[in-house]
Image (cartoon, rainbow, N blue to C red; front, side, top):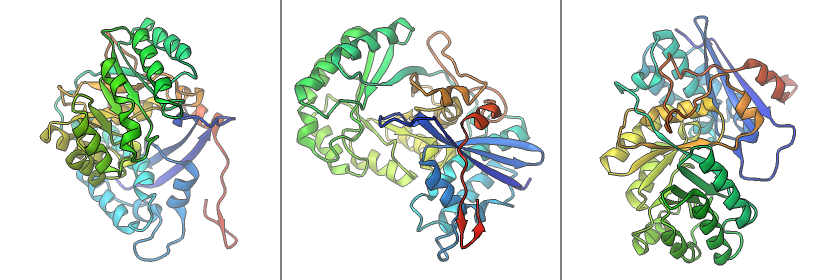
Length: 385
């Protein structure tokens, strides 16, 4: 089948707040071929990727993603992988290319899975999908008391693993951060799995991160996530060497396989967190999962938005039984919640990728119309989008 039509939908909540919640807007992709429809989602600023999709060519390796995609033939999983290489080569000088391609690539896997009547996890090489333990991913409260209450509520809902991140953490003193971590531990209980996400707050300042290490170790944090930006390999390595009892996690910002591999090879991390909507889609995420197994690093999905994104993010490590913990969004916006009719709900404390053709997630097109933002791109009097 040949790709006949691609639509990019910019969706947004009526008010977008200045908080670390990426579910407040979305770029959803619809790909059509042979009377079938595939859906994908980018973890990217929607307008930037729309421009990348449609922008006029600047030169031979600075082309819009559209030019490589429309009319391409997709019959096998390898066709998707090869098309990804073409897109990257033609958009080499556009930093956004992998971001934009991610949502399209995910939609193509969904489309081909429907064509072949098989789940995407089988198409990437797994015989079965293993259940994962979801951790309730949420923002810190504004005060330790709020963090405590959020943790208690999470435990009451049946989650035994929780991650607190962003918000006030790292913006005040080390003592204030200590109190938040203590509150989170108290709320989730001594046997709960607790993760802390610093949201790259210290960029590459190892000393600032290490000031928090005693409290994190005292409260038995399962991992300490993204104290630094993903490119600061030396900072990750230094902290991991100084604090071998404090497992580090990172990688959600990886925009290609190589950046994720470098973090594994040179950063000393023990958990690699990959967002299929950012790294270039399911195929490069699967390559990272395979490499993580080889290097004895645990692969974890990064997902804070919709259940379409959740299904895509679970697929690359669905068949790895020992990598059994996954990020699960519990504070998503109404946009993100309403986008899909299909919900990947915990069952006996675990979640799994759907066992249906494609990604197994039905998109609610009424939600698209409800939250859709009108976008027009005109260049030299010609409407491109």
